[in-house]
Amino acid sequence: MKKLNIYKYSIVLLLALSIHACSTDFIDLEPRGTTLESNFYKTEENFFQALIAAYDVLQWQGGDGWTMKLGLLNAASDDTFAGGSNASDQPKWVAYDNFTLDPFLGPQLGLWDKSYTGIYRANLYLQKLEESEGLSEAFINRTEAEIKFLRAYFYFDLVRFFANVPLITAPVSGDDLYTQTQNSPEEIYTLIEQDLMDAKNSFELPATLPPAEYGRITKGAVNALLGKVILYQNDESKMNQAAGHFQDVIDANLYALEEDFGDIFKSSNEFGIESVFEIPHSTKAAGGYDIFPNGTEGNFSVQFMGMRDYIGDTYAPGWSFCPVSEKLVDLLKNDPRYEHTIIDGKLLKLQGSDYTEGYQNTDYFVKKYAPLADETAPDGDVALNWGNNVIEIRYADVLLMAAEAFARSGDETTAKQYLNQVRLRVSVQPLSGSGQALLDRILRERQRELATEGHRFFDLVRTGNAVAELGDQGFTPNKNELLPIPQSEIDITEGLIIQNPGY
Image 1 (cartoon, helix red, strand yellow):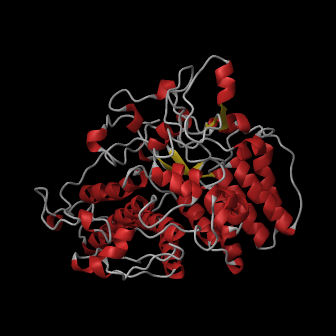
Image 2 (tube, rainbow, N blue to C red):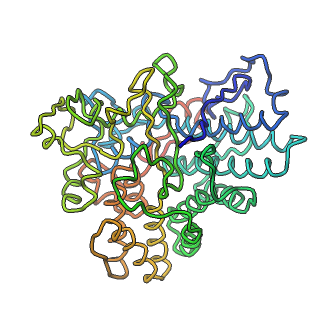
């Protein structure tokens, strides 16, 4: 299927499009192109290109080194270790894996810059949209809903990674970059919820998309993210609200569980029936290290998770990051999802394949995002051009979040219905229980169903289980729930931005 190539446009004319909030590295007050920002935003085509520029940030994975959210969150969780060739291969990954982070060491700067770049682009779009003339009402309303979703998405990442962050809702001038202060998580969440409610209430935001627009936001994505945002705040009085948003996704009857669990992550099944919010990548950019880090459209995590120096059938060589933990292997070994989630390297070796054992090797590897030999990019550097999309939210995730929200709001019958719908898809016995026992079973089911998809770390943090499950990795309570604020942000604001506790 053809998908919307939401990264093909480049807006060289926008003098500040790549300003990273609170960072001097990208401040350039001299125009670089022949078309200035002041006279660019005229037509719907102009605005559409600016919209694409905001979408573009979703697939960034290379700010300040290799900062792929999917791989990093796997490494921080108990699903996988950091891996790589040795302990000094990617020190930022290792620091997140064993929680030896500090203000100078870790993935924080890349993640911070990515989100604030997306927020800047969203804020600029909203400002120009308000000043625009001659655009159709349908175009204005739909793209405003999309851009508010994107701003909410980027702030949701920031508040989960850092908690207290600057709340910026309009383009910031050069002088004001140095005077930003932090806002509370409550204030950040208020904006996130308002942006998502605005998007949800937009009549023009579609429920479905034609294939040519795959990658754009739908009402289902908005409802799913809104429910997730409320769920993650752990306010028991709002669990019925979260449940209601998830129920809207379910009642739309536009999504379903794939009949075969193994089909979910096949490239031939992109934007499948289970996909609610999916970030596209492509093999067609022919990118190389000359335009690294964010110039290609590829999914770097795929290269990272492959087996190092692999020789054999099916797979392509990778860099041996995110070796799967024995703990996850033990949890899944009798589960039908095991064979679609984990590659058994020892078994491959018995069948004649070979690979170099990397750092923290367990001989088990991530299968959902493994590099496949017949899917290598035809041009450019293979490592930078994997086309595997990232499924941020899929229907099974919605069902399990709904199960949790209903259980926490007192409707355990509906909670068990949605929990067991996920289990029955893979022909495992339904579960019962009530109270905390039911919530524990829902969380465990999330670990099984969504293993290696980047959800586990935040699940452990938000449910208060991080110390119990990650303590042996070095997790320190009241510290490692968050990343340190990048030291450069503290320095350029001369201490107006305050470091997170423990760092």
